[in-house]
Image 1 (cartoon, helix red, strand yellow):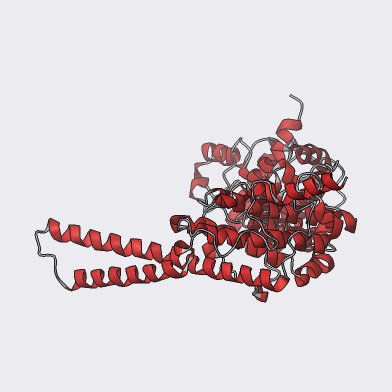
Image 2 (image 1 turned 180 degrees about the vertical axis):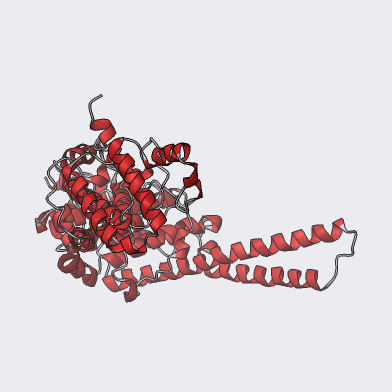
Length: 514
């Protein structure tokens, strides 16, 4: 047994890295290797990921996670109320971030000329079974991370200044071409100024190359990154205990369908944002806004929505303010989750985007700025959030209908299903507005209105435009009336405002038997 144990330890410490000593990889005598050069921007991206991950594992952030994030209303309602399960999910997410970071370090190691940095995956795979083999002091690890972050910051400056240099050079070349096309000598104040700007910018770029990762050897940086990887692994174990040992992707699959796994998190975030925008300004909706929202709803929500809207309306006596208040009860905790989901999907999508983040390792102002998956819709239960969206869309339908009736006044209401509720509401609105505006009608307009109403009772089913058309044929004198031609145009097709009603199957034209 002793021999087998010794072989196992040797395999752990040896493998393809025979140059290890008790303090880590061979240091001090490592080959200078090749310069990082243009690869500096990718390395800086990786360093920023490691710095953000380590920052999120600080004692302050872990306490914020346990006391503020996990008990939040959005997580409790959409994910789970079991704190142990939530901690396991948080640990799994951090472990997945760690795996992404370590894989990038492995790739840089394989690009080194020194073979001792090749196949780092074998070394990292042994960290779970032997977490105490390399126990680096926290102060030393944080100092290493700070040094790398400073190099990454200078690389960020280099990234921006290279773009400025490129722009100056383009301006200078363009000016030269312009001068040559006019057969003028290559001199003058403008050319001199552009030439001096190019020279000054070139010196700045050369200075930043010396201070940044550009001039460092890849082996030198990879050595420091390996120390950071081993330290972050230990910090995850200290922060989450046994949960930190669960590798990403090895957690038992949960029964509820999660939005992130299904690739629907960003889509649902857009739906929630649309609902919030419509609810905040229902009186000034851009064209096809409701249609766009309806077409984007999940099929399960669409099916349930049709039947729910056809039920007896129990919300008809609520005011616009009351309906908005009911929606706000859900939107006040759901919208921030959707917003965080959108922010998370704008992460480091391309090499160099890290340069715009401006985060510095150890800066406490950014302690709570790094989003975790639990703060987004990634782990949200699809059935739970479908239920909330169905409720919101139902309220939204009643809100828009109520606003439409209120704003139309004595105007004819858009085509709706022939329910007594809609007819009664129309009659009440007409009678109230008729009383309040009767004194404002001229005798000529009043006579015309009476004629139209008589014809409407004699020939039901005919539109106002048809009545005016018939009146012009029988009585030419009415053509001089001020109100002639002012009747609202009514087509035979449903208006844009009724698209959602038609799609729901609530329009009278689709419900009436043929």
